[in-house]
Length: 223
Image (cartoon, rainbow, N blue to C red; front, side, top):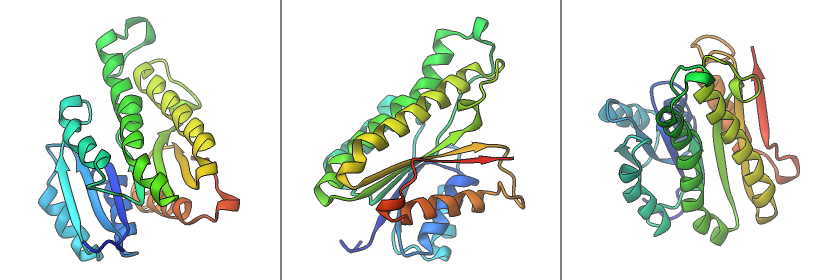
């Protein structure tokens, strides 16, 4: 890959928003690096992205909840072997449970996926972004951060914490010319609607393209 080719690193790539974001940035000439669940068809993703025009593609299968599985990828980022211009964190997870019956184990999984992993990945890409004095870090949020649901306590807590993380990172990093924002999706993502994966991908592209004077820290999409 040429050193002048911009790279987007997408964590939590799947056939919905993650792949749509990859396609959108591929059309703009971005190289793609992504992490998908082990049960995803990475070969199909690669073929799709080559057809979309990406000049270079790297795919890893990893469970974001597995801290050991993340370590080699964090090492590559920290060593600046991978230097993304854009990081998109799209992973999500949380068990259905009421707060009164939510187990510590289920809460720990939700917080690992929704807060600890994205924080670790953001910290890992920051040295290269700071050196370059530019970068974009984007998160996929959810409406449960704004309106928690009792029967989805774990995910509500996770998305609330992710939103707080994104907004506080944005405040910290804006003076360093690093744009951080969260897309809070308060509705169901469905093909063929204003909440289609392609529509979400367009918002991510717009956030990346914003002039610094107009940087937004959050975009809330409501049904």
